Length: 454
Image 1 (cartoon, rainbow, N blue to C red):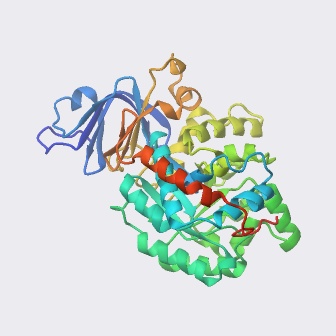
Image 2: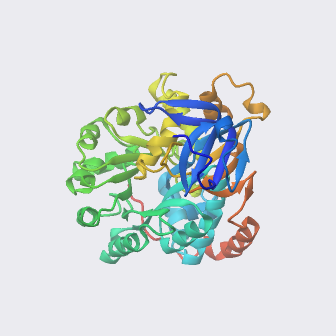
Image 3: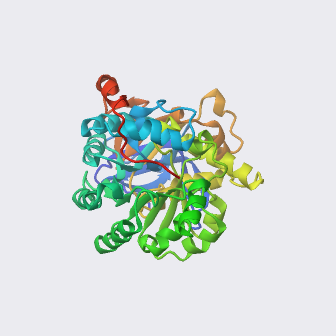
């Protein structure tokens, strides 16, 4: 589609850049000396710089030496856990949960969550993340931050069976109240924590609510091999099989991690009644020294999309999806014993269209094309670490960094221009959060919100 100069002015035209595009087979390509025309928060056209030169626009960005990518998507995180960054280091999973994280989270207030979410959104915007899937507590506070920051998000209020039916009811009430808010930028999900903290009765009830209210489910499942082996020993089924027999897999579901997915789970996932996706956050798996990683190739072979994620910063230390993309490519090569898996173009596909489908937005974001939401990031490739460019996809995945993101745009609105954040006052956020830290990190009370006994 080529816009006409007779039309009313476009909101934004980005020109003189290279644009990552997908063909009708979803293959990655690059349009050189291209321009993107944005109108009403949508991409109206991807055309040439010359053809866009005379078009009227309220705002223009000339971006020579930059690549326009679809905004990155963090498919599984606990945004407010940035407040716990570096607090629980060099620990096995059980000690990480029981000795540090779950005692500290028993102190959380809605205000802590709100300020943590502001810092997280600032970090993600600066790293080219335009959308995130958050699974945490006090999510009304996170919804407020998403609305004010301009980001896009899929949000879910987490619950455990130990909270009684009230936890599940709060998750549903949150999802119904916030669905479609922030000018449509917020979607919602039901958020049971995991099969090892939510019993089968609650999981079955959640599946029924998801079907009744047309809501997806976002939960942790088969996070690591130990969880799968423990489930088999205790119940005779894997965590994935628990999700099938409780009906969770009849709904649209986003599974976090899945490094414990086994060969016997693959046919279960293949016959799932709803859209099933897995979010992979490889940095945390390396830190915990888990023996396996998300089986990306096996999942893709059965039609399960694998989106990229960071998990919370308490385990991952950052919210850098760019790093997750690089690590996914590298770790999968090692896991497969094959340097041809994942290729750079495959990694970019996971970072774009597959991540968009994972969060239920595959028709709206994940590519730069007419009719798609104008969620766009501009990446500067003029630095010495990105030159020369022989293979642009490889340069983006293996040489570029999140700090090379110059501009971040959501719904056609510029949230960061030339590395300057426009919607969040970071120094004020840091001051407020640091004043709250002593009360937040106190573990002297002996409480914890849950116990990890895998």
